Amino acid sequence: MKHTITLNVDNQPGVLARIVGLISGRGYNIETLNVGPTQDPNVSRMTMQVPGDDRVLEQVTRQLAKLVDVRSVNDLTQRRFINRELLLIKVAAPRERRSEIMELVGLFEGKIIAVRSADMVIQVAGDRDKLHALLALLEPLGVLDLARTGGIAIETENHNGADDEE
Image (cartoon, rainbow, N blue to C red; front, side, top):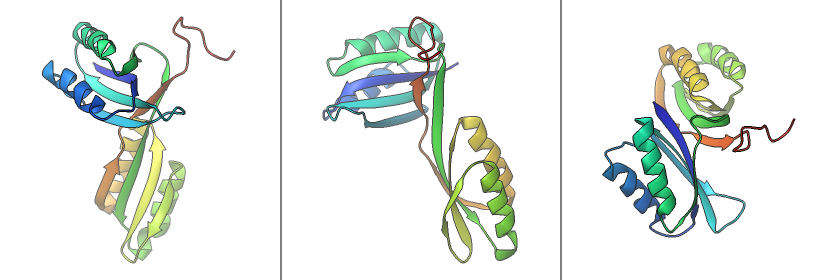
């Protein structure tokens, strides 16, 4: 099972290394990892996806919460949350295929951010399934390069299970 874990941490040197070390030291792989500032410049938000056993990952999240620079840890896996990734993809774009590419990008609510003589760069945000579907449709055209952010997530209900807005 894949776990989506978010942490609010002090924005200090070495925090990321300690967190990654704790997780990898337990034999787990971090599949995706994103770190960015929050509304408070002293706090960073980490979002990671870690595959693994529920029981052991619960133990890991408890150990993460004990680290000095960690303010909060949430395993969102069993909660309602929104998860998004950003994909930048460069595809071969001969003139005769550009309208087809533009139509596909529009269907996936993406944006063409660069056009050159032989290729295009596309930006699209969404959940993992959406990005995989677009990639599958663009593969036959010739994917030249791609970069993904990995997931970022935000919980959509309170810890007691009630929606924030009703």
